[in-house]
Length: 532
Image (cartoon, rainbow, N blue to C red; front, side, top):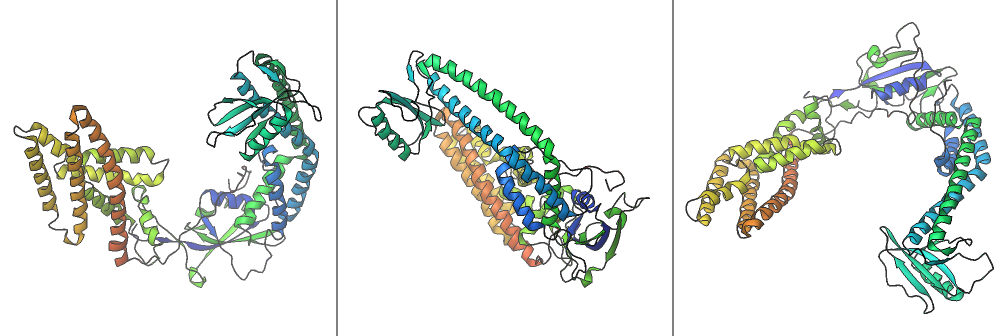
């Protein structure tokens, strides 16, 4: 626990049929870090895959939104180069057949969005408002109507005098309906273009009142939805015919192998996998592969022959792991260095609690750290820090913080409130000074505790002058300010003390972290007789 655990060098031989599933299983357990065994007599497993994968990524950028979910085929990938060519051919054939369907689908989606925007605009108008659709190309009406969507923030509109306008406020953007002669609207359109406004087309067949136009828009959108559903069925059938899901799954596996195992050496039948592992023996490295159907052979070798030092892993109990971040700020502890995480897990909360000694505010930090630990993992450090702050708050005679200590003295005193408040401050400072006797080298820590008391007194003084109602409002807002300000400052100070007053005495950070192979982009299915 006080020393990093060095990883072991391993060499593994497996078949081409099993290499993808084997590596995926080891990656799921975070068991290996790949590293090349140089010089390697065998060629790379994914040799020549980069160019084909670049073609795949180019197609992916264009068609990804229209593809089904990837699916791994039941047959293993024995020859990545041949599989790449076959799957890319399937995708390119699909893209050629799907291009007109996708173009129509996107056109219909754009029309549906435009009609939805127009429907919202017309819905904000009176039901009897006259609507004139835009004329066909080349035709002109005496009076036309245009609709634009503009940003909410911007300069005033400067439209021609002959243009009538009606502004409709929206949540994310505003809409402007303009009515006028064709040449005046053309000038207005240029102004809207300069404002980067979005033109909403008004179909030419729309006529009559706004209520009639809304009913017509609903019918048009219904027809568009039916056609879009038919196109989706056609695209699904096309994807099944070209087996696009399997092509995407196999390409994802090969992309993963090329990205993280590009230098895996392979012969016609076998693949050599080398690197570092946290496993102690072959059975722990490859469980389930030592039965009747053995599919890999593992050998552990000495790491002294390696040019690079072996990576190491910090092996600490769960309650210490959050504090490993302090050590990693300076660097990974080397194999001959101590791992200070366990000591930091005790020292850091004590330092934080001493500088932030307050029962009430410590409870707030404890609750915040516990509730937000999954969303922001680093905030789990507030849990022990809050507990320590509550403990020191009790030792300081602060059952609910310095604010409550001083204000309580003032409220409960028989004499004047000001005198009682000063007496409370004096007692609070006296308790702090008693704890500073044996911490001369860390006198700045006590200064932060005094600063906490000073801020609390200031908040209480302002609260006392704010009246009966304002007292509790100022007290609440002041404590929130102290939590935010001192929580940040004390956290930084604790980190500085740990890093530059403690670690620099013995730690150099000469090691390197164990970086496990990440799992594949596409989960591989279970196979009978394999590692899974």
